[in-house]
Length: 338
Ligand code: WQD
Image (cartoon, rainbow, N blue to C red):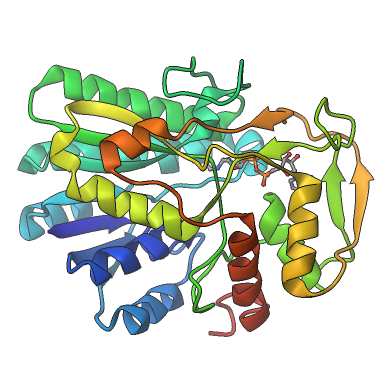
């Protein structure tokens, strides 16, 4: 298949591009490198033994998108591009409207214009808001806890509305839980700009000495060890799910959501302890106050993914932190030095 991958240089995008290339698909990555590095795709090309086409560009450039879709006639679009820092979205909500929502609207319009009706969209468990119960199924009510989550929810609704407005759309809305880990080569991985919001990159940066300790945001939750529980999923498992979704996209009638999680929850202290084992050192942490908006537990029911995609996770927490550690140790400053 001929695939347009938006955000192809990003953490999940780069791992997905690698799986697409290895499976023999042709890929063009469109990325503005606002939170990623072109170096990632150079390394993907080495790992795949063949290169994706690479174009620097922004989804807010409607004319560029239209010209690209008309010229290349893609079989499907895999849409990762988007800002995803919860804290930043609270401080700068209009940037999330412009970048995530408007950018996605331009993409959908360009797809409609050329009749490319196959879309795999990078959605998120964040659309479930505060979980009413775990495990979370795709039928769980949706709500937004912050402007980032709202952007994902609005983009999903644009997909539902478009699919209802005319026949022939095949859209997989993949709702990720907590993506972590890295390709086992250690050559590609997560390289967040600034101080990471998310737990695992912060833990790994602490392990290589970039922070004095990990902050554990709350140890008074109603959970076995008092810390927050999440459904961590290996980024390579996630990438393989995108390959399955794009190859089975014709089986999606209209826009259909699918959870991508392991169905298992691990606490913050579980993660810190597993990361310490992988790094061969104790990772220091300090307990601080709860983080606003955090839920005690968030973990998914992955059974629909098994049915729709014929896909299940293969990697557990040990492999996630071991692979993430290998990437961090080989690239203590991320792609910067690359
Ligand atoms: C995990 C746990 C924190 C940092 C994220 C994204 C969201 C979605 C799901 C993609 C929580 C605790 C964290 C730290 C800590 N992904 N924590 N110290 O909040 O579940 O959501 O993944 O769309 O967009 O935001 O992930 O890694 O921030 O937090 O104690 O320094 O770790 O309280 O319990 P979260 P997270």
